[in-house]
Amino acid sequence: MNKLLTSFLLLLLPGLSLADTAGAEHNHLNLTAHAVGYASIALFVLAYLLVMAEEFIHLRKSKPVILAAGIIWAMIGAVYTSHGLPHVAEAAVRHNLLEYSELMLFLLVAMTYINAMNERMVFEALRSWLIRKGYSFRQLFWFTGSLAFFISPVADNLTTALLMSAVVLAVGGNNTRFISIACINIVIGANAGGAFSPFGDITTLMVWQKGMVGFWAFFALFIPAAINFVVPAAFMHFAIPNEKPSVSDEMIHMKRGAKRIIFLFLLTIITAVSFHNFLNMPPVLGMLTGLAYLQFFGFYLRKTHHKDIRALAGNKTENVLGDVVPFDIFDKVSRAEWDTLLFFYGVVLCVGGLGFIGYLSLASNIMYSWGPTSANVTIGLLSAIVDNIPVIYAVLTMHPDMSTGQWLLVTLTAGVGGSLLSIGSAAGVALMGQARGKYTFFSHLKWTPVIALGYAASIMVHLWINKGMF
Picture 1: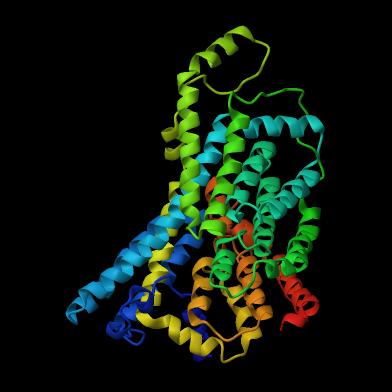
Picture 2 (picture 1 turned 60 degrees about the horizontal axis):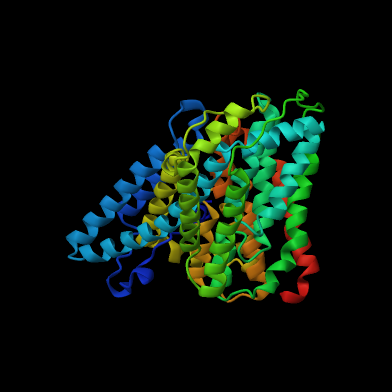
């Protein structure tokens, strides 16, 4: 029992930075049996407990993990300094910060575009269109979930989830039950859709970039991923209120430039994918290039602001919500979900510190002695507790000797396993921030059993239809 608990704790702590990535293998201290190692585990577990209790204690989730990250690295720094190796720990934490900066800037651009579309009334216009169409909440549930599944292989699952949840929040109004279950469905759909595409998720990007799985081989996961989405959705369907949003003939028009911003957002996604796919550059470079598209277009909107005033004065019949104010790109940046971005900072630095201490190599020895299938299924379960990015990074660093089928299995489980809990994926964490109070850790936890059923079904289907790859 003690050994099982130890292995569980070790495997939910794989890090983004290790001594080998910092280039200091020979000076790396093993602190797994040191007081600093034990204290770091305790701090991380305590911080995550506070994150999960956010709904009740109303403490923003970023605060405990940021504090824990600082203390963990301070303790590591103190030990390495006392051994005359201060630059080894410094190099490791700088590597962590680089990993985080890429993630943070990627998310910041996506959030900025979402906020820009929101300010241009894109989602309000979509909401009014859906209400005029007379779709029921159940139809909207399947509509948004299916879009999340099919958009995330092209875009990333986080951006897709943010986009679809904005629609759900706009349509759902005060119906908290619908919003909560629809957000869960979006998270499942976005994570499942991202699992069968090389650029649908950061984890698939890493596996593809490392050359473990060929480009077209990922699409063998389409049917298992679809099963993962459809099974829990079929159960949740009956919990959706069998009613329609209040029907209204109100027609809301998007503001000037809204369609062009949507186009620029799609162009930004294409740019990010192209930078990685064809130029072998980090996707974040393409996203930041796309931010420049929006900045230049924002400049144009500001210079032609007189057209907005003239249009509003000349057409009093149109319902255009919001103030007629000049478009300000930095206002959209400031409205990003900073608590979510800082939460990721804390998680990346905490997990990176624990990996640097030495728990990753220990976890590798324990896990893959069970056999690759058992290990990969367990890794998927652990990705529900820790974001799947550090989990899959850990597996790539372990570099176990596995077949293509097993690499596809761990890609699938790490991607869809994050749907088991709201904190298990970037999509879930972001939606907790965007739909605060309506989509929470515990509202998601209520549906974990049926999500787990979909998780098990997708694994069995993969083992069956793709058995020739094992």
